[in-house]
Structure formats: C-alpha cells, structure tokens
Image (cartoon, rainbow, N blue to C red; front, side, top):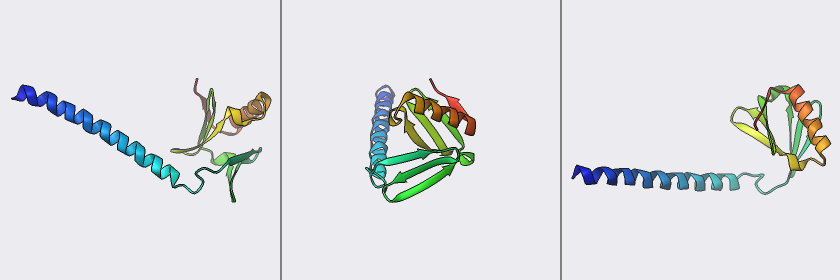
Length: 117
C-alpha cells in the first residue's frame, strides 16, 4: 500500500505545484492589466540630472542620486529606483547606437552599475 501511495502523493504534489504556478501567473497578468498606465506609451527624457518619464498626462522624475543600481544587458538597461522595482530602457528605443552608448556612459558615471552578458 505504501509503495502505491508514495508515487501518488508525489504526483499529486507535482500537479498541485503546476496548478499553483499557473494560477499565480494568471493573477500577475490581471494585476498588470489593472495598472493605470497599462497600454499607454511611456517616454523617457534623459539628462545629466536624472531620468524623466511621461505616461499620458502623468510625469515623474528620478534623480540619479536616488537610483539604487543599474544593470546593463545585451538588449537594454534596467534602472532600479528601488531594490525590487526597475525601469526598462531597451536598446531599440534609442535613435542610434551613438545615443545608446552616450546613455550607457552617463549611467555608468551617475549610478552603481553592473553588466549582464
């Protein structure tokens, strides 16, 4: 009896885990879709003072000295205003490779940064 129950319990645990992961993923997607800025275009203006963002009628400013860290990736940059929150600036959003490299130089000079990949 124990020989049969052990695999059934393991299988049940695996099925439960998969179900919970799918459920949590669905809940995260619903939460994202409820955000006021969901579906709106986001525009950044980068200067020596900081990062200004525009979303619809809203505007925010993040001074460089408040950036916790930045992470360079092959596809763009993550700028962290908090340890668990980031702004994604993709490489494709810049008008040229030169503009992107100037941004990387500015970011490296103004923030604690690291590189991935």
